[in-house]
Length: 136
Image 1 (cartoon, rainbow, N blue to C red):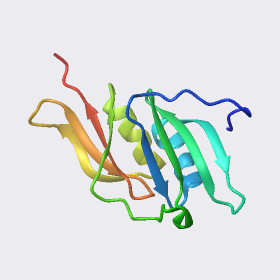
Image 2: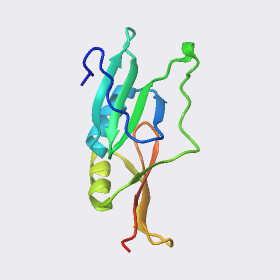
Image 3: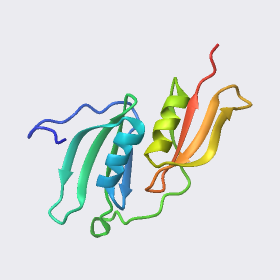
């Protein structure tokens, strides 16, 4: 899906993650299947790379594009961060992500702080955690 010419989709959330990936179009397709993402804007480039993609996931924006070393954004394998989804039904989110091809890193379970938490890795190498807050 592409935003209509001259329109800018709503940016959701106050802190937006922007990922430079090797295979941004494939990542968008995966996020749609695994996390129920909705692609609200896409800007393809002339060289076949994806210049910009804007997704909405669970009420927040995630933006991504293919790496562009000639513009100061080389591809660097992901490390040292986790994207965390706060969810109400971790079993549903987890099953959908794993069925879509996410690799289990830490199976979800009730943790010492009371929440149910687990981690998966997506095909792009991004580590995602899912956290279902404890019911008070």
